[in-house]
Length: 256
Image (spheres, rainbow, N blue to C red):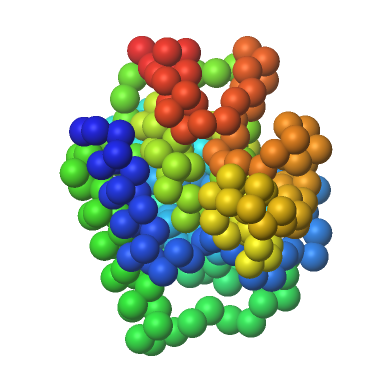
């Protein structure tokens, strides 16, 4: 598939979900002392709903990819929870472990942001239906982020600055999932309307502030710009922008 078509279907996936997982809607009162642990796979519509809420709460999370056929972290889920069902979240700060996407969404909302209970009835059914459509829209690439591929495990988890609906970040997350590479996901959602739009418009034309959320502040201070995705690999010292370059790096470094 051409790069342009790949990006187009990723954009479509975000549009089908109404770009949920773009904005920080209610930032967590504070980050957990230890990162939450999320066992999931990118193509799952149920996992998508959890990732959207984590972006909206501005919560970082350690992601352990569990694609179908994966052997690295799926056995861990069976050991910890008793069954292989996804998403599965562990909160080492409270000793809580949860299956079921809406139970996880309720838990993180109540625990870290004081949010009321989840939507029910028609709203919930509509969210699940559009999340499934978003997954199917990536079917032209064989449902990327679904099945494991042979890979070499890194000694340390990688770090990824991303937000759920970012079409370019999704392309990177799909590869990380397929290669079963664990990573600390730094959710970098848009905190103001001025964040919307490509960096060249936002920074040069509008001259909007870049440091509107905590992870955006890090990127602006660390690199001088805010653009997503941004990958840090502590195993090699590599840090880089540009989804195509990141994917090429991951394939060269970790794909078997």
